Image (cartoon, rainbow, N blue to C red; front, side, top):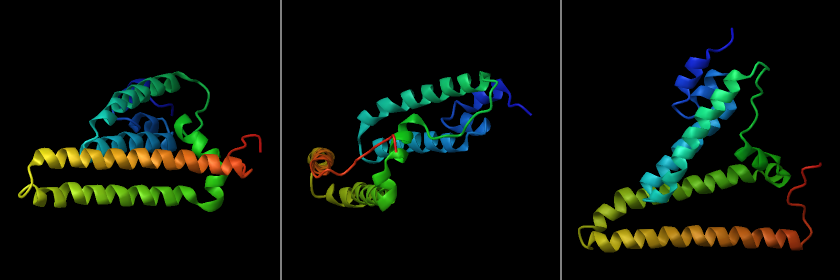
Length: 170
């Protein structure tokens, strides 16, 4: 039975659900994960600038489901283009670095969540919230900048040492 185009469009209002209805489970989970992770991070860590990506993901989901529901050919459940490059990098899969980075991200998000939900309410009794808010923004900004600089320097070191970072032809 071929899926209904109208139902697919209806389900696409929730990013990822339309893809799942069409049988593209992997793509649906990736879209949902991306959408809700951005929403969680923007709300939990007061990074409102991340919310600019939510309508982009939402519209992508709608238009992608619309175009895929019109196709007569069988649909292939491959990674989304955003995740396809990460999966093709052999240095990630050889050393299980993906799981390691996900673990670091989860630990960091847990620490931020504890700070936001436990430490800040306690400190707000003694320190004006104005200073806490700017201090928290400063710490998060410094962490993001230092992580980016570390990643750039680490990539340059790998390239200088002659290691293959990514070779899509292999």
